[in-house]
Amino acid sequence: MNGRQGPPSESEADLAVGGEERGVYETIFCEMEDAVFLIDVEAGDTGYDFRFRRTNASHQRLTGISLEEIRGKTPRELLGEEQGAAVAENYRRCVEARETIEYEEALALPEGRREWQTRLSPVVDEGSVTRIVGVARDVTEQRERERTVQRIKDRLELAVEGANLGVWDWDMTTDEVEFNDQWAEMLGHSLDEIEPHLDAWERRVHPDDLPAVEDALSAHVDGETEYYDAEHRMRTASGEWKWIRDIGKVVERDEDGGPVRAVGIHLDVDEQKRREEELRRTRRLIERTQESASIGWWEVDLVDESLTWSDEVYRIHELPTTEPVELEDGIQFYHPDDRDAIESAFERLRTEGESYDLELRIVTATGETRWVRAIGDPQFGEDGAVTGALGLFQDITERREYEAALESTREELRQIIDLVPDLVFVKNREGEYLLANEATAAAYGKTPEEVEGKTEAEIIPDVEDSEAFRQDDLEVIESGEPKAVGEETLTTADGETRILQTTKIPYEAPDTGEDAVLGYARDVTELKEYERTLEEQRDNLKLLNQVVRHDIRNQLMVVESYTEFLEESLPDEQSRTYARTVIGAARQAADITETARDVTDV
Image 1 (cartoon, rainbow, N blue to C red):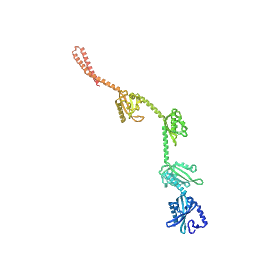
Image 2: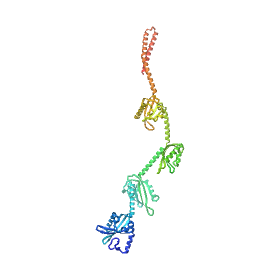
Image 3: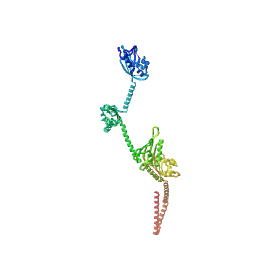
Image 4: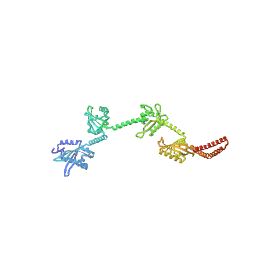
């Protein structure tokens, strides 16, 4: 090779090899799939000068630079200052190393940005590097695939770590298993605490769950299922049990179809399972609550015109739960007198999206009439159209019967209250009459309906009466203590003044729970007038007593004295007996005046 190293090169006259060898090299040079190029090297005082001499067809195709465009140019002239300087630096390294070097580079070329795996070999002639032979392989797509794979791998690792996925890789020929950190941490262990063997998994699976898990695994290994997928409990480092979802797949089989390798993941579903169990408990509680409260649910799909009832709705209708029901059936169960109401309400729900809440009657499958509360809410599709309805259905028969009985009792009580001749009333803190019996209303010249709902100021003619009553009412409400008013006056609608004896007690309105006062007032006007008459009669009697005690008693004393005087001068005993009789009568009359005095004093 005449002392040359590396591939042969052209001289100014000819190649340094024979014509036959030259033809071989020329063929290789031209036909190589990789980009091949020749660089002339000239050493100067300030460094090396590199100029492109020749490129093969692959180089021209891959770079988009023709031989005419590249020949004789330096890297800087061809690629620009920044890229050219980097390329020239690699050429310099090859020259100074005097041996083949390899590296990768990315260049922006007419055909676009490409990545190259480049190999440079120096050509040494008489101790100096005169040329460089370069071979560059386009690895753009390969590197892009590698980066894509790496990105996927990075994302997968991030997903595994972020989602806390435990990963296992099982050699099914040796039962050796490779676990990741998350697999161990999920059970409260570090990875070095977990033996890399199938036993490490089997020992931790709950014994009650292991048979079902092994059945699922066998079914997958036998090709019956696409994946192995099972949920089971595993013992943690603290001794507690945690729910795990185990998903895996046989990824490699031998030539006979036997399993060789399987991979899979562990997902921590403990919280999910606990929520599911809590949901089941809640659902059971709701079902029991619905049953005890006689509340069920129903659903209508307007797309296929189907009706679904809960078990409780079936029970209310006295139908077996196995009995199919159509939408029209649900309407027909309503009482004939109430059917129009439910049909109109459901039609508004269907066409206008309007909810409804009605109390209606149904006739059950056994012919019994029941009161129900029917609630319906529209369900909307993505386009905003009504696609269905969801609602509640409650048996309120007992409540309606109770309300009817209560209303009857109220009417009877009201009749009794209205029969009471005294004033009975209830007023709230604002002075509004919540109840007024007929006697109360009559005092104001109104009916009870005209009084109830009005304030005292609106119905009492006398302002002073209204203010006095108002102060008493507020005192009872604020203090919570009863109050008895011995005598108060009320000016009636016809202007008559009546005298009342009133008792007021704290009261709570049954419908609203608001503070109020319950009053009972008896009209004692006639009684007071009778008392005044008695007082006048007593005064007259007192005057009479004074007359009796003074005048009559004095006259009786004169009679008594003169008769005693005459008695001594009477001639016979018979006359004296008459005189003594007169004296006794006078004395008795005097005693009567004393008794009359005592009576008037009382």
